[in-house]
Image (cartoon, rainbow, N blue to C red; front, side, top):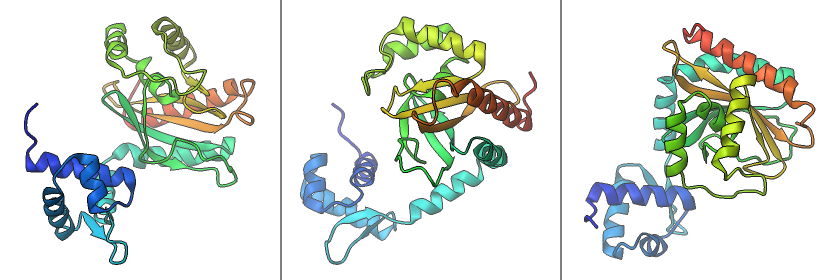
Length: 252
């Protein structure tokens, strides 16, 4: 195995701090397998650069607000978020459910914006910043349905597939049938495949050249977002995605 560079070690350290939210030097060194002296040196550099901050009482480290500044800079450059927002507001008002915007990064989706239903007590996995697989999420299936058969097959072979619930699809033929339905209907459904009690309905967003750049979805408790209600919500989500796509310059 190639020896890690100092930069790679620093990035791994940041990832570890982000996952634990607050962690001490010894626990961090043990988790990463770095010598305490190396871990201490990296923590010092990252703290002095304002990427980390240390609590004076507990001596534990956590991410600093610098990451919020960086996130804000990224968001400003993402026209899709700005364009999608008004449509998401309308969709929330029409359905009274939580509306999500997700981007695609490799074999995963990343939720980048959300208008949450403040009355819902259910804490769903679709929180901003959360990553999830393509094969068992509505937005992921909406993306896959827009790709070639070769792309989907290659993705399936390489995907690290996990059974999140008893409904999670782990069969390529079953997934293929699901994607055919998505192409026919214009929206995808996550039927409690990622989290029991949560159902999601999603549709892809295309940019002017036709490629899928994002997806918009509705998520809510399966007791409220029922199978009978899914077609109505699906049509609303599809229409919102089409309108966002049109605002991005896409013409069908």
